[in-house]
Length: 278
Image 1 (cartoon, rainbow, N blue to C red):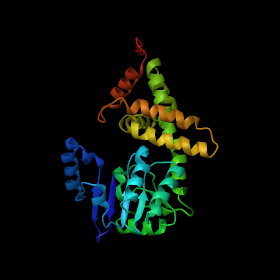
Image 2 (spheres, rainbow, N blue to C red; image 1 turned 90 degrees about the horizontal axis):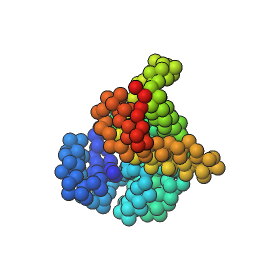
Image 3 (cartoon, rainbow, N blue to C red; image 1 turned 45 degrees about the vertical axis):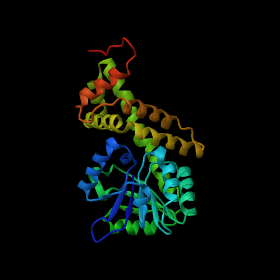
């Protein structure tokens, strides 16, 4: 999804384009989203970018470079293009080459926490030649937690990617641990050894994986590429990518209670004839 526009007083003056609107079955729902948020909805990317001085590109990791390529054909000269996608530094540098060659100003933007519930207080890192100008524009739109990193495109995304080894790796370890403990019938005993917050932490991580695992698997592929480019074997990143993909592909409802979610995960991934311990 790309947003283009400039601040008008304290509020957004933005136009959004989401390629889901190309699907007639999804068009009405996306229009309702736009209306609810007070955003103008565009039918094409060209319409969204027309006259926009500030562009936020927010797509899945696997589509980031394609989105930059499409935007480069439409971007206005001098427009700031903030790439907030979870991709490797090399992917961002390739996207930057496309945008800069078209006359835009590419900025590496890393979103360092879930946007909800923080919204415009979500921590953001920016790097690249246009980072200071982008930070000023975002501040004018009400974003309150901004940090400009010294250095070129790739600095902000390096922080994001390398941090994800830990964050998404912990999620993968949680899944592996929780499923094994469930099948052995010792989940409560294992959780008791990990501290009083462990049950809530396990529940949160498993919900994140089953709800967002497919998107996060794409991100972990980019993390693995980041590590490989640095000469670091991406063993944990690749393992986490597999777990994210498995759990994200189960189609479990976000509203499931933690016990039902874990039981469903264990059952779905069990070999034929396997029964968990009572």
